[in-house]
Amino acid sequence: MPAVGPAAGRGEATEPGGEQPDRERPGGERVAVVLAAGKGTRMRSRLPKVLHRAAGRPLLAWVLDAARAAGCGRLLVVVGHGAEQVRAAIVGDDLTWVVQAEQRGTGHALAQVADRLGGGPARLLVLSGDVPLLSAATLERLLAAAGRGWGAMAVADLRQPGGLGRVVARAGDGDGVSAAGRPGTAAGKEGDGAARRAGTAAGMAGDGTGASGRPGTAAGMAGDGTGASGRPGAATGWDRERRGAGDELLERIVEAADATPAELELRTVNAGLYALPAPDVFSYLAALTPANAQGEIYLTDALTAAAAAGRRIELVRLEDPREAQGVNDRRELAAVHRSLLDRHLDALMSSGVTVLEPRRTVVEPTVCVGPDTILHPGVSLLGRTSVGSGCVLHQGAWVRDSRLGDQVTIEPYGLLDGAVIGSGCRVGAGARLAPAPRLLPAASGLAGGSGEAPSGRADDGTDGVDSANGTAAGAGPAGSSGA
Image (cartoon, rainbow, N blue to C red):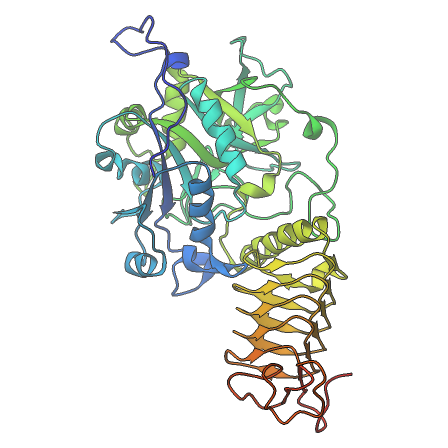
């Protein structure tokens, strides 16, 4: 469905050449441009990087859902390596596929969508396809910031930016100095073997793929120590600051080799998330020429040129820097996978679910669990599973695409795959209910069980089900129910 971006300006005085001042520039519709053309060399895989799965879903699917939740009615996905595989795996009526035949940097990737926008004004959310922790709330903040000027970019604070470049910010009142003395963004690598370029962060996601760089690992983010769930610890000093809207604008991007000692003290990096105006941004891209042996064109260079021309590019600091965490190798894939699980476990515990050892528990974000349910260590709940209230899932229970009613007990190492378990039933230790069995509650007054009761039976005749007692027996000694 169509969505409307920031409100149009009042149509007052215009700049020379007939352009409206940044504060009054119409926003147009919200369109997401997702850069997903990369091979992901460091993944060492035949599978395109954006199709690797975290918390049960492809990386790209998480990004697309965040864009939809932020009100983007159209999603333009720039693909290159493994384009047909990506198209086959990711479906949606709101998707438009754009092929980047040669991966020549982020600016080149964005330029490929110019002729798909119809020429009218639009607010582009430019995202990378491998940032599954991205939230719709952050995208809304970016769009709001862009609506106050020409564009916006997200930034994240790193305690140790090291050899990354720095981007100098100026205060919103135009005095040329950040109120906190901090930069807006930073530089890094856009591709394997590519020259270091401004505007990207640690743990680059470029791989020469057209994806912009972002912080690649949780280490070095906003917290040095982490809690049991791997979340950044309490930040100190300027990390805790909450600045007002429009306080910081992009002034310039400085590579580390060219930075002054004072600039090297700055700690902020580009998070690789942008809200930019179309068609204006394409004129800045068209004016760029490759300045490296790879012939790559970088989006960050276009932003630097726009800032130098007086365009207002607001900097939006991420409240959780992990939102910008990209995936370049298997370690980083494991990190975002765990973060997605931890986020969902936190929500479940807040809603009244007991999770005895979160770090040893896997509950995919597509799973629903009712209050007063207890999850013991080693439980895995996957896919489209729903668990009622007051259930107990003991150690090692593995459940996928199943429905459990209220007051269900799964004894240790029970396995359910596509099962339907009625309220009050018990699945014995080591029982295997797959594929697609149905275990219903026992009829009142029935005992022993010949399988003739109107309830308390497995519809597919699954072995090991004590139908009259509403219990699935385990795979151990005969008749064991794990009691």
